[in-house]
Amino acid sequence: MSVIERIEEAGVVGVGGAGFPTHVKYKADIEYLIINAAECEPLLKTDHYVMKNHALEVIKGIDIMKKETGAKHAVIATKAYYKEEITALEAAKVELGSDVSFHLMENFYPSGDEFIMVYEVTGRVVPPAGIPLMVGCVVSNISTMLNIYHAIVEQKPVTSKRLTVTGAVGEPTLLEVPIGTSFEKCLEAAGGTTLETYLFIDGGPMMGKLHSQDELAQKVVTKTTSGLIVVENSGYLKKFKDETLDQIFDKAKLACIDCSLCSQLCPRQMIGHDISPHKVMHYFSKVEMGTEVVDNEILRGALICSSCGVCEIIACPRGLSPRQVNNYVKREFAKQNIRYKNEKTEFEIDPIRDCKATTSNNILIKFGLLPYVAYQLDEVKVIDTDEVFIPLNMHIGSPSIPIVNAGDKVDVGDLIAKTPAGALGANIHASISGNVIGSSAKNIHIKKI
Ligand code: SF4
Ligand code: SF4
Image (cartoon, rainbow, N blue to C red):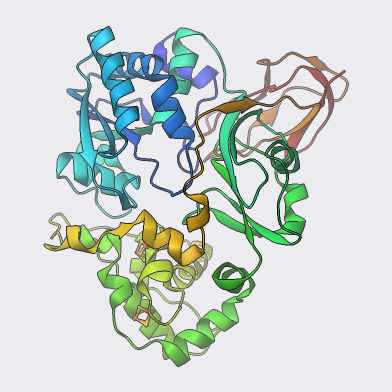
């Protein structure tokens, strides 16, 4: 079996984003293999753990993929202040005689956005709505690289996930759990919550999804789950959770002062993409809610928004939500099958880009999360569970097709769902040994015997 086939067989997907199937990404000749080790969402620490504790495996994985793809350069892009992590990776590099290099960045958000990272490492701009391969690059998260190593060297499929459980919890911790484990079980493993009523974030503070307490029971860990952050059901986050789309548009009409700060601080605009959230806000301040969203130059910019959240969480002095408005435009354009067409080949970089960077502290202060930043999360608790509900759509592409039925006995690592023939997708494996209780179009339920 080839290296790429092993990665495909093991069901490896990008753990740092939406779960793009890794074997597809690597079917290419590339110039730069870039390893995203920025972990730029504040409070999340699993990539730190991987860098410190699995450096040898990661460097071996990088060396294999560099050779496989014929990449001229393999570069670990991380933050200069991750001293211990860099020391561990440097030591592994020397031990293995690897020629991987390091690109050290300042502590800014969103340094882990692959468009931003490609620019930081190579000085090249990925075209709007494009992919890094268009400028000779592939970007993989460092934890994805560990999964690649497991797939190629140990023939081990992806069956577990590490995540950070933090915020208002009894014992903030890093967990490793079987995929399909309930969030309730994860919270319990972190000592439960210290709050009577709470909200929780599935992921990091900026790009994670904010949920109400009663949604905890429906959530399970997937291949892309990075964090579970419990927060107070008050202040900025409560306002953020409760606001309806109608209210967002009403406020845009009443309160937007057209100051353009949302555009000036937009990380994608700063690398020369034609995205201007303030113009989108201005447009909607002049039309009635429910007016058909038509294709025009201003609104089209919303299609190349990364949803990083800088405009609404950091930039806007009036507490408005350009990101939500962009998301609305994206949904409306998707219904009309309107896609972004890039015609630009030259990109003008904002000359004062470095001075306008959003820092982790800006984010933590805005969310009221500063009290949690000092937690030492150096150990991983490995958690077992009696039952899992393994989702079939944990990746970009088509949901996987179950190949097991109720009553089947499975062992951890057995293939239980496959990519539909000819489709983009990823294999899925049993994360615990037990009996299949049932499978549906959404998930496969397995219980220990
Ligand atoms: S969320 Fe806002 S700041 Fe981020 S890319 Fe979109 S418009 Fe720019
Ligand atoms: S930053 Fe806020 S007030 Fe200023 S243009 Fe953007 S949405 Fe309007």
